[in-house]
Image (tube, rainbow, N blue to C red; front, top):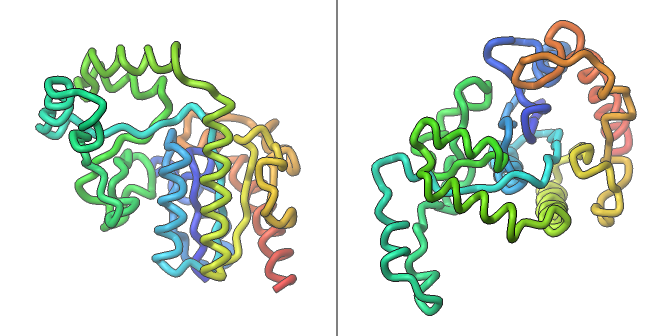
Length: 259
């Protein structure tokens, strides 16, 4: 059986702590193949691309975690191609706005567009080449300025967006609709899945069409009180992964028994 794990850092595996994430522990116990796709700090959009990749890789089961609504996706402009944004600034008017978009995202490449940090096990997939998009929390994107991957103008634009245009309620609703659609794609592909909605404030009303038996929250197994660590997946490598793995295994067994 191939188990795909999609989501943000909580669902990731850390190359500095091999075999310690819940996905690795569970797959080692059951002798399953782990398809690790989760990426720390990534957006809901990136998570939905992970789901598409899981479907393409013919996963037998998907564990899907949601994320917080403070994450966005921006073109990578540190690859020697700053020109498109300069062209937009020089030629801007509302009539040709879409014609002058940077257009670095290629929908046919799917998840390969997303830049993956090498500290995550998921970065080791062969198809992850020539990324075009940074997917991260808005606060983390500002760190890119220090490495000159984000220009001062982009950093200021991001701040102005947050302080003048961003609404967490609108973004959460948008993200929830993206996740709902991703789950429907799994259902059309006949791939069973579990959906953790912890980072959607555990609000089940955001997912009206999802079978309640497929929804889980971390408080159902006291995940929130487990010791935390500096590992990329946040929970303690020595004590945190196993309770997570045991709970996921129980929920997978319950769903599979219903098939």
